[in-house]
Length: 277
Ligand code: SF4
Image (cartoon, rainbow, N blue to C red; front, side, top):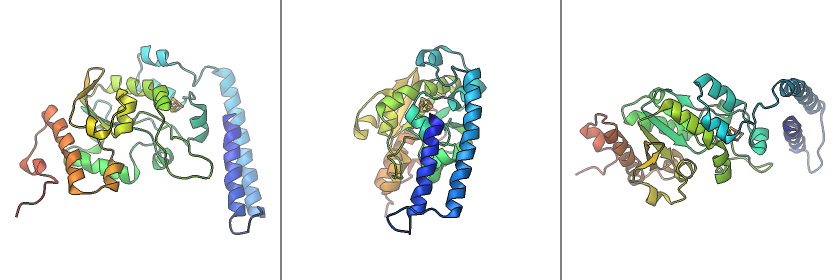
């Protein structure tokens, strides 16, 4: 069924392309029909492989929440299981790939976002693209390298968009609930000293708190005994790049650095403060 929908998506994209520039009636040219045929053949061969896998491993991708939470995972087993997960049919049809998580698997600090967007879905890594670049700069401002922290999302598959619409949408709470056990398994393996939830949606998915950011910031929460701070998603700073908003995020990160007993220079303490005359 999943491959059927993939075929529909391929066919639709090709038909839209045929329609572009030739008026309201779709008109096929030889090249576009050849591409459609090639896509169908590829999907049919994948379907044959998938069918034989399904016969060999009927339970693959259907693991329950309790099974995920009670099992003692190794990283390899967990990564394989998450990448084969098929619990959300609508997302399995839509995703290019599962975005597992990246970084130091023994990190002291872990960042949690809400879900992959189009860039992450394409590249298979959380926080790439412009928001990802900004997160990397924030990590560097703390005196760390991106590879030293662990970065993951509550939802591992890109939220689907209505046909013909581009862009990204926020994950729904029921989608995040379904996927959260995978993140819990990752957190239990990393055992970071501190976690940072990036944005109110990530905070809702991780902590179950549906509150505006002004209520969430400046407080310490706990998840499985690990202190958690909530700050703005880097995408928010891209939309609101004032010194004042940057300073708010920076103060949240300074609180994290203090909690982790990281060295903080005076220069770091003064980042994004208005310049004195
Ligand atoms: S979003 Fe999470 S639970 Fe749903 S299919 Fe993807 S990995 Fe599985």
